Length: 235
Image (cartoon, rainbow, N blue to C red; front, side):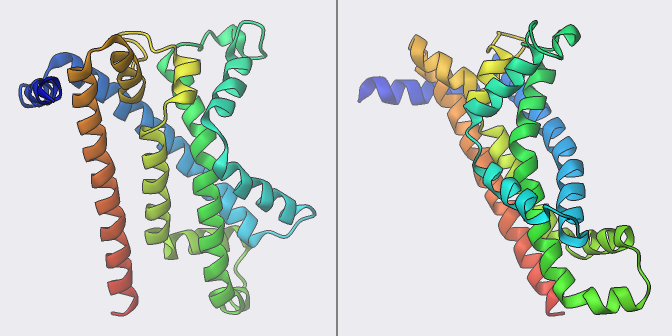
């Protein structure tokens, strides 16, 4: 018990004194996840909006696959990206393996289905309400997609925040493609796993506290967006 209290005290000290190593790991984690969520949002909005509005053969199957990929195991996503970026893979010439870029790609693969599926559902719900009105105005399918995305922006913010929560807490995929290299590809989750195995509980605990604080902040933001959307809906 005394050892645990001492580890917690040291972890708190690392946070309060803004330990450079802790900050470096935190900044890399946030940078990678924000980059991934920005790319995944663009892809997810486009895919989800198109699936909700356009009619084409196999649309139902594509939607089902997209929904199934929401539960894609991170290690599988990491393995796929690893095979693509390895020297023997089709993208090996780019030499991206074990770089932050590879980690961003892995997170994009994980997060895009989440944002895409939630976007499709949000746009589909809105389309049921506004379909006749939009088509009576002669709106093209692309214009309808843009209109639905704008009208459902608060739901889409929720989807983005959910995706960011998945990305920032991910460990398996980024470990495979990033290699957990110190000062290069070490994120909060991979550092927690490494430092715990080394017995450096103080740093692992400090990173865990910061990660937990981020999770609470994301959940608070989700609740805030939902409340704002409800107020505007009934205004």
